[in-house]
Image: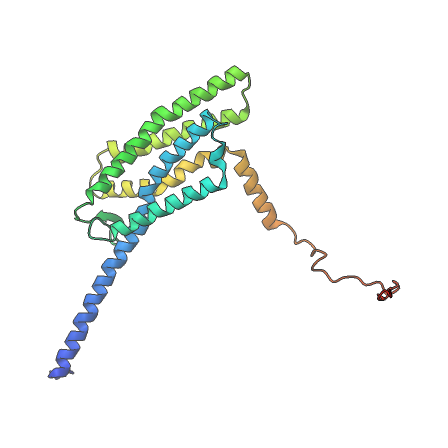
Length: 260
């Protein structure tokens, strides 16, 4: 049997260092997982609320186009971005305290709610957002489509753009109802439920914008223009960067100071 490497006071010091490093490592790992959980869960949590605000914006712009010109000013967009940033940072800060929290479990690749005093508030807000999306899907957007159809009939104009926009909205409403059923109605338990919930959260933001990417010709033109620029041949440098051509035969008139 080999004698111990550390004896006496050295052994106590070695054990103290090992215990300290292990404790600090576990603490930092828990903090790291908590930060990862907040950074990953906050966008998933805030996205439905921003979708509700977007629906309100659409209704106001479509129903009152002349009165809502002020919404398109740059200062309004800056205020909206600042509000979104403050809401996101506040969500992160609150969840990193002892009031509420969401942690990430790498082994199962899921978000887990921590047993803290006010964590239940986020569950209530999550349910409110889910039912808010359902209410918008079955009330606001149908009313908006009926209004657009009525105004187009009254004006006698029915363009292809309006038909494409109607198709986009109908498909988006159907997608949102499917996600609501997956989140609230179907009682999923066990590993399958966890997998369905996480995949639905992941695909929600992608599925919402797919109708616009497929049926929006403006997006198609932007994508084509982007690829054309990337595959275009390099252009000749501008005159400001190209070397100037000097005509040696040109006559240079010297500058002479005028004599009073």
